[in-house]
Each structure stands twice: as structure tokens, then as C-alpha cells.
Image (cartoon, rainbow, N blue to C red; front, side, top):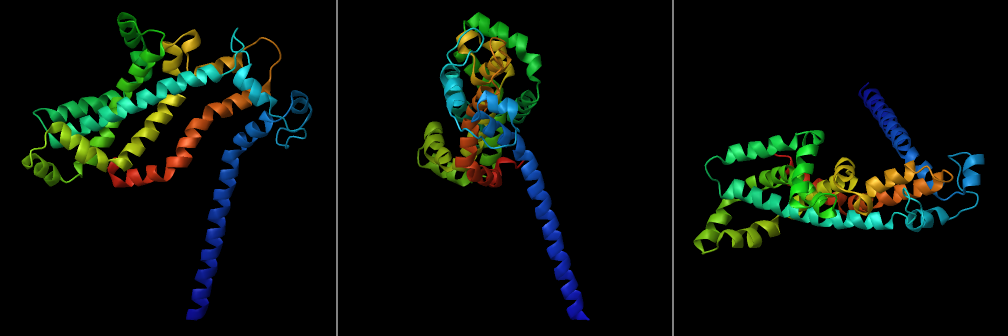
Length: 293
């Protein structure tokens, strides 16, 4: 009797695993289907797209849509491809991520190891700022950027992303440093280390996991932003997301779906690269304290 029960339980366990993995595979394929369609379409000619099945593999493989999307596609009235706008996004995202990450680390350090009267209120206000809708700050930010001469520039967009991301980066580092041994900081003080020496030589070198979390979070949000990019930049200074939208909506000439798909994939490659390279460190950083309250 016991053998039959064990056999029945084992059989039920196998069936359960098959069902679970089957559902996971089904939803994974469902989720990846649009990406597959984009990829195969980007390597097809327009004639093949019009006459063929969108799920079919390219019969006459070509990289011409990719070359055109990068260098000669018309965006509005300018036919220079997306390469310049891709450069704008790089020029924007690198300093914005770097500055917001360093300032978040500094804020987390101060709020945990150099506490001052009212530090909880300051932290609460920074958290509150994280939940202010983007639309609520558009007009005030536009006025401020105009007053300081940064309206319509990549530099202005960098400032906006640094300020708006500061609440999140502070949250990450504050929670991470909360679990960092304060005894090490006190020992460094006794040895004569000052504020900046403790930050640069003790805390920051030990912050690798949370730095990875913050960089991935900020990079993804800033690179994929459309609202701020379309609101605070103009003409040749717009980022990649805005240029992609303008490319797809350009009404001059024939609608080239293969070029649009190639441009969309190019726009997504940097975030995909970041996740592939640093994805495992992202999970490790979260486990190390990024989501602890």
C-alpha cells in the first residue's frame, strides 16, 4: 500500500512539473513572439513583407534595412538615420546615471552613518518625490530650464533625470548602508579618517552589488524615457526614443516596416546588453539589501 502511495505521489509530481514547465514555455513563446516578428521583419525586403507571412523566416536575407535605419532613414525632414540621436542618448544616459548613482550613494551614507536632526523627514520627502507624476512637473521644470539657459539641450535633460532619479538612488543606498556595520565607520573615525575618506575608501568599495542595481535601474529608466525627452529637447538634441517615434510617424515616402523594426531593435539593444551582462549581479544586489526597509 505504501509503495502504491509513493508511486502515485511521484506520478502526480511529474505531471505537475510537466504542466508548470509547459505553461512557462507557452507564456515565454507568447512573450517573445513580437520580438521574433520584429527581428525577422527587419531582415526582409518590402516586397517580401507585403507578400509573405510575418512569422516566416526571410527568404532573401538582407541587412539593408539596418544600414538605412542607422545612416540614411528620414526622421522628419532630415534623412541622416538614427545614429546622431543614438549618440544623444549615450551622451545623456552616461553622465545622468553616473551622477545620480554617486549622489544617491552619498545621500545614503549621510542618512545612515552621519545622521542629523530631521534626517527621517528628509528621507520621507525624498521618497515622496519619487511618486510625483511626471506630468505634474513638466511646466515648472520647463520654466526653470528656460531661466538657466538649458532648455532644449541634452544638458538640461541630464539635470532633469539626475534630480528625478535621486529619490530612488537614495532609497537603494540608504537601505543597503543601513545593514553596513557602523563599527567599521567608528573605527575609521578613531583612526583619523574624515567624512570623505570613509565614503571613498570604506563604503563605496563595498557597494558593488547595490551600484549594479542602481545603474541598471537608472539606465533603463533614462534610456527608455520618452516624456521628458519630447518635452525638454528639440530638433537635433532629441534622444533615441523620440527619434524612433518620429521615424515611425514620418509620412514622407513609402512606409518601410523593415527599417522601422530595425531601428526599434537598435534602440532596445543597449538595455538588453546591460541586462545580459549585469543581470545576475542585479539579483544579487537586491538580495544584498536593495529592497530591505
